[in-house]
Image (tube, rainbow, N blue to C red; front, side, top):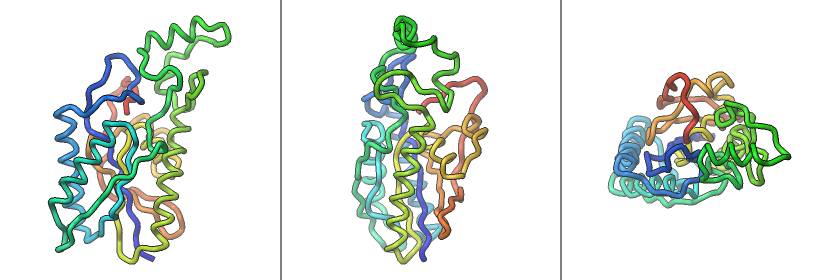
Length: 238
């Protein structure tokens, strides 16, 4: 059975509202973010050559604009390169399952607005101070989910995608997943790659792939790419 590797790629930097949970903001990449995506494409190209991997022709992306734009730039850059005389023809498939954690009906409100809404609703207790970074906490609002929920959703998508591929590929193959940092880290926990304690200590660099491999027995391992060490007392961002 051939090796199957996933590249987890956090989108590039983007235009976002201040003091607003960034998860579902609909804004595009800024110029730095476009550079992050181009850098990701170069890293992927170099890795394909070094490892002699094939590149799967479909890139899975979150539907959020910053992720899709990152995927588009990566794919366009890779189309202009080749590895071992193989041209890269790659398309983008977008999935709700790869989105960042949803805060439900509070999407794109400021932190102060969210806290005031919860405070003013007689059905709810006040929010804990760490509500935004607490992996298990879910806002008591319609459509909201916890970071753990989002990670499970992403992990399930990656697992199914690579499980299906493992039945058909005959050479070591890399598949690209473009999404969001917090959801990817919590997915890595669900896949057994990170411990719970590591979720809070680590982050992801914009546009720098983290490579994970699904073994024949169904377990996962981190094989290349660096997690980012998180500064103390910083909130999760995607």
